[in-house]
Length: 590
Image 1 (tube, rainbow, N blue to C red):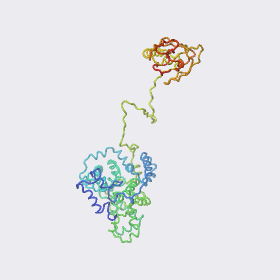
Image 2 (tube, helix red, strand yellow):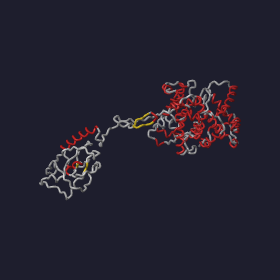
Image 3 (tube, rainbow, N blue to C red):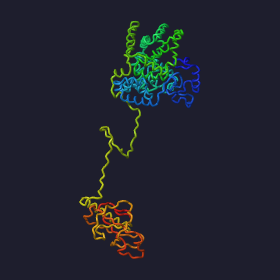
Image 4 (tube, rainbow, N blue to C red):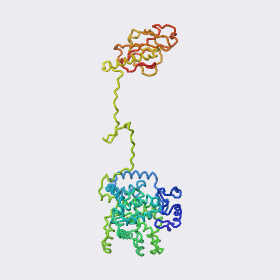
């Protein structure tokens, strides 16, 4: 099946099935993303990379699955690196390279690519530049060519399958802005796949600056008129192949197959239209970290795998058969596990590439003269780019794109007050409320005014609402105790709401200043008594005596029986010296 597929295109049968699927729509529209399918979502299946078909669609044979636990662990590491990128890229670049070789987590790939390529610094130093270029009208010469190439970029990806969809619109914006940013270079068709890959992982502005960095730092001169830089790199690839795989080199030299015939799309598109998508992502992770040497390594691995064995060369391959083999690569050599392992094992360094570049440049000058396009020097990887371009930590700081604020109600105040000192949060001080001491000493200057106010309140309340509890309770002071013997100091009165249980005690003989009329709810007139100062009562509190028992031994008098002065307890209430409450119910005890 792979032999029938060429350059990412399906065979005629597969193409007809897709066209039949889209025949429900007019010729100008398509069945792609952005809800253009209008309810026909069940007609297609999209893989985890966004492809709905083609040779780059995900398959378990070509990709390696990473366990979820390992993926989450890698995400934590990459978040730490991206938050401290300046330190990692300058002091621990080997660790960054190792993690790029293992693969960048998909959730952070777009942000990592932007940092690796230097596009983040470029964007911050040229704030508003893309917006300015996007608002300008492009050169009509380049605009027409760009519009004709939009539908050719990854036609089986849901982002670009819709004619006029958001993917093609952003791709047009990025490519048009680049022609305005570099009018001397203009537009090259190989730039469209590069920009499309970036748009799959980041917004249009970030993709634009990523494209700028790839065209100026990683692959300078590749997209200029004449394609002199790509021809020069073709000679470098051929010279490195002679050292890596002599049989493949001799076979290509025998049939006069120039490198420009098979490696142009490989190098100019960074293998984005050649490999399965899982392999493309892994190659780009390493390419943006280590530079163009990764592109050379991938090309050398493919040539060595397809033409490096004598068994394959014994079949008598000619020029045409060799070109067909290089166009339709065998899938087992494109699998992620095999390809990445071979790329990492190949002993080709950046110094080898630069050394061979100087040799081939001298030969080019002898045969072709000086290069017509003076390209800037090539940067080999993220470390070289970050070292060559001055930047600040502010340029590398990640700015949030979504900010959520929770407004507080206007009538409430926050419980906590933020204090910037030492970056701490301190609790707001509560207002101090002065509480009057209920057990103040007699010498307290506030005591006299408090006692007068309390006595006046108690008198008014008792005259208006006499408490019925005075029929069953008896509050006395040491002065009114029947016994002549001095009593020991009593404990503080029980302040609970539940009255204490009745206890047997000697029957007191109080003297009532007021007679209680016989009725079901008699009214009682109580005269407030002033307490004398007693040295034995140190806490200035009233003594509470037990109420008379309500058993058969003390029956209540009938209604028609006159009340004697010695038959009912004396309902005298002492003055409350240190309390602001008045006796108002039968279950209040002080």
